[in-house]
Length: 147
Image (cartoon, rainbow, N blue to C red; front, side, top):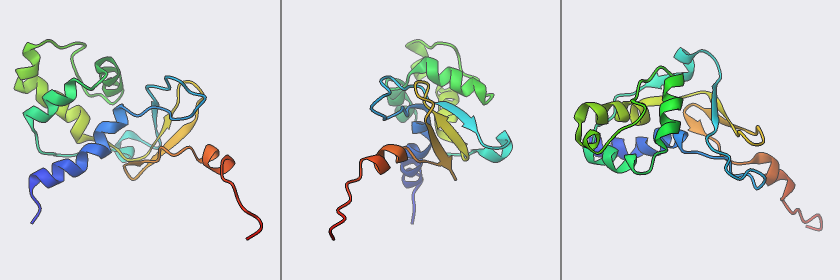
């Protein structure tokens, strides 16, 4: 039997990390934040989930998020967050639920994540981002032709 905690743990990597990904290419120092360019209309390329709310989890995530990037990214998808927050907000359930909605309930299904330095595209398909740099993988493979 699956608990809501199991479901919560499985959803964290899929949705939160879209906001914290950066280009892993050697030529791209500080390739953050990646631009999110939806493939298709917002209605088809995104979805809204209903995940378990954990006040403590969101409070701990606040320390790790680049707030300015999260606010500007969320605004592109009509998700409202305050421009800044203070110590009191970290205990305010309304504020924490708004953050939870932005980082846990909003899912990008189909998009390209584009590096601001080199314009390399990483694809998101069916909600799963592919952060592998296919070009470097292909160019760096040593193939032994004497097999």
